[in-house]
Structures are given as C-alpha cells and as structure tokens.
Image (spheres, rainbow, N blue to C red):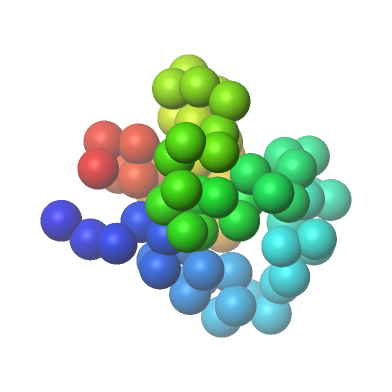
Length: 71
C-alpha cells in the first residue's frame, strides 16, 4: 500500500510541472487534481470520474494508471 496523493505530487514536481500545467495537458480541473493529491475523495464528482481522473493523471505523469486505480 502506498500514498496515492503523495506519489502523484512527487511525480508532478519531479517533472517540474504545476497543477495548472497538468490541467492544460489533460483537461481535468485543477481543483480535482489537487483533491487527488490530497486524497480528498469527497471533493471529486463520483467514483467513475475519480477512477478516470486518477488513471489519466497517473499516466500523464508516466506512472501506471491501473496500479493507482487498483490501490
């Protein structure tokens, strides 16, 4: 088990990207990206969206999206 949010944030900062940069790249609102990084699941629009956002965000950062969704 690993910290999803910390891992996403670390991968993003390691690539020198801001949340705004990621928003432009994958067209997911910055507030949802922040909610994923803070593991604030209640701020996300629903389970299906959360899984899709999580997978897309992880893959944009070069991570295995399926691992994040499964976690």
